[in-house]
Length: 103
Image (tube, rainbow, N blue to C red; front, side):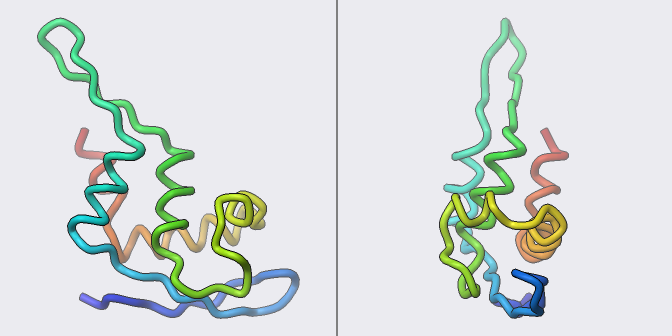
């Protein structure tokens, strides 16, 4: 499996390239820990997932090179279609949605 991938996005009206990376096992676990909360309700465990945190933190951790500063603020200011596209590519590389579905 590839460790990095270059993708083309629309940014400020131009085609730009960004590089995203595959997370290591430890980095992936740290990311999962940051947006998943596990509660015990009686004898049951309930997992809560913050989709907003999952997407923002995944982009923050996985974008390696971009034509914009790699900060939460810049990620939040991306055009929705561009942000969704980047996240879909990050997800393909790191299989984050599989984890979300398994709870």
